[in-house]
Image (cartoon, rainbow, N blue to C red):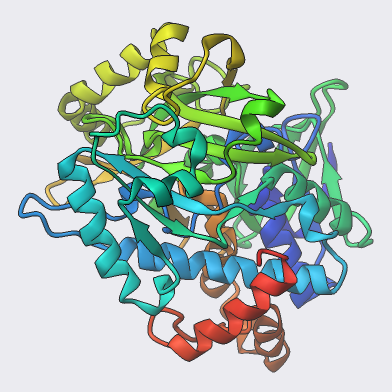
Length: 493
């Protein structure tokens, strides 16, 4: 059996693995890095342009990041954390653009205003309260608010056309929001990594076994799909960045930290319009409020998308129930992930979330007419023939033990790392790709702690991410300086 040796093994060819590979290569070009991907292309699962919303999640427009309590108060802490994380991502992308590692920004990121849009007296009051809290913080000082239909017609003419003039409406807007083609971004990073003689990409190679050796290194078996040749990779560090496939791989690893984790798979679909006379009337990402009982990732939004340079409109997502963990996965994924150490949490979540399950099944069986009816909340004049249904990527929400030993459903991402720092996995979904750089900074800090003590690594981290080691949430002057630089470099203003 052929054996390859690597300092770092990246499992999965998506934005997370590509980001970590790029960061580590910048920190130490001599590191031998191998990336393995189960498909015949990188960035073909959740990272693919049409498998995600392409929103540069900054907390500007996503109302699920600012929940409202029963007493009417609005919590903005999560939006602050996500915004600061996205600013870190923008800093790293700016670094790569300046060094021509990434192409002209328009190939992967474009300026698209981020808007929140609500209707009805109750939701208008919520949005006003949210705006007042957020705009008072320096992260969101450029946010605008209006409940004037004339102003809203300037911001979103397609959404306001033929709307009931008696209906209370309101919106917030941040001009320098972004639409990101994460597929293009990832392919460009991987293409650059391939120019490094110490980097190797192996496609069509699913991982079949992960086992830690007595030496502390990892023996990872891969099986080439077409030739059936089995290879083993001997790696000092393994990163499981395989989207929905990360949980089964984490379970294969056998590390104690895997215990108690489960996954709740959610599928998604979009309505897509490419009709020029419709597309040109809407230039923003307009997010509304999720229906009661819907998972946070199902917040409805009408988006401008620019993929491979072509503009389109996207509306959704329409969630659905599935047992697959990957879009090109197996219907047995969910059942295969049930283990003795996570059975209780998964059963608990299943029993306590029957309303969610029913909602997802109902979404899956909606007719085209019903989906377009939902679209008309955002675009009253929408015509059924102008919109086509497209499948989005799979998401696997985290299930983990709560303090009582039962299970709870987590919406977000979470890093799981072995105690010795030789293996790490990223689980979960949104905001996902938008916070990839901050997530990979966390991986480096937890798993390459010794190397970070080297002055060369410290210096390079500050070069890649000028705000590294400081808080953008607390330091208004630092945010102003870094944001001005990144917005200009990435041509978002």
